[in-house]
Image 1 (cartoon, helix red, strand yellow):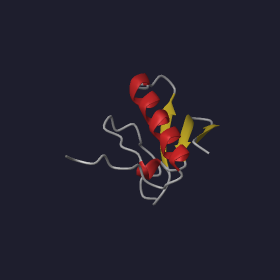
Image 2 (image 1 turned 90 degrees about the vertical axis):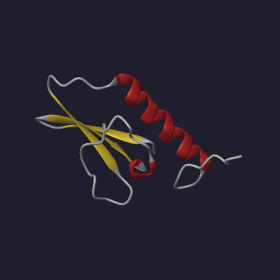
Image 3 (image 1 turned 30 degrees about the horizontal axis):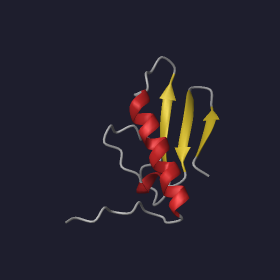
Image 4 (image 1 turned 60 degrees about the horizontal axis):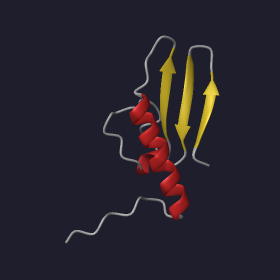
Length: 78
């Protein structure tokens, strides 16, 4: 599972199953921040979402899920 999308009365929530292992330089994650694994983005009516940053999170989540590890691999430094 990469992420889920849920609709509520006042928000749409996008929860990333392994969100705590993803880099989020644009600070899109704004919910479920205290957990060890999940992170979520709550989107309220009228809010704009940084589309390129969201796509980057999804791509990271797919790569992490495909790797079979719980954390992204660090690049070797030379």
